[in-house]
Image (cartoon, rainbow, N blue to C red; front, top):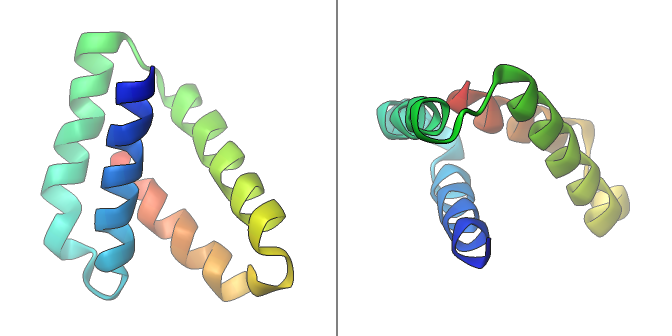
Amino acid sequence: MAEQAKKLMQIIQVAVANLDNLERVRTAVEHLGRRHVEEYGVKEEHYDSGGTALLWTLEQGLGERFTAEAKEAWSEAYGLSW
């Protein structure tokens, strides 16, 4: 699980670094999502739960700094893996 958490943080860092150009990372992130479906049996509802948990965590950690604009950007970035 620790390795998976590390990988998740790495892909989130890539998405954050490319928020202004998500097309640049779209193929790699979509491939990652497909691989999780094929290898681990991940279902779309798992991504929904994960996205909800990610947004909640960011909101809790950032408080008022987690603006509607930031939430929208994170939602868009996370949506790449679906």
